[in-house]
Length: 418
Image (cartoon, one colour):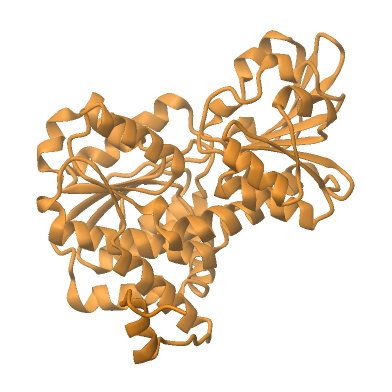
């Protein structure tokens, strides 16, 4: 079996960490048991480009239990948990191509290695697998049934491909499932991002001015959690509706040029490029902390920052201090990459339970229905979304009401009024 990981001897530690994660993933565990009985993915080859974490290991195990042949590579150079990668290779016999801290050349070599199985289904987190197939490995596209996409950034890219008519196979927008973005993006990103910032810096959030750039579901989650720890929240946005919502949620809203002067900690979560640029770095306070929790590090203009820097040094494990030409110091966390995975462990397993349940069931759906779909981006079928929510509630020991016959008739009618 071909693979490329840091150290196979880390497998025993990874095995325990995967076991720990599994304890908080009841929905995925139920799916794995059914998959083991029914084998709905038998004969299907799946190439996955995801964050290589303990939770992802549980998803890979589920797909393999369903009969799939699986390969896995990292969707971000700093997001791999080397222990999980080792356990996947040694214990589950799944080829993994991922090393935490890999350079850009190795990153794309790993993507090509994962594609060597000639996949029928792709799983992406950021659309690098799909873009590589469409630009460098076009000969493999004819054999692909469909794919899934895990994150907002990837869907932005994929919808542009579909709009321009260059997308060659159907994609299921896992990120847009309610049981994904309302929980993973908001609660998962919120907690894990704040966790990453605190682990990297050991700074107190209470009383600090915390600038959140981008008020989508991820930005909402970070703002909510940082405020819960006593930070004063400033939101920067370009979308007037989201900006208005941030105001109504009780936050200050202003342009990034103004926020740069008042912020102590900055975190970008926009999905776009150069949100914080060199003119903004120049306005920041001495000692400002800058992080990114969007998928790609392009949200921070790091090249522009280098141009105005006279000295750089690594001051802590995940903190690089840039001393600007004006004498002020800017601290960039995790090389500007996903701070929740670069400096922490990513989303808690209990919230990834629903996200990866969507991935597993979307793969099953594509196996059955993919050949009927056109080359565009599709939502997760609502039935799957609701089934996952019901299973999660049941696992939590929570019961809810059901509609009476009278209530169903009322909702189905137009004649009944006041």
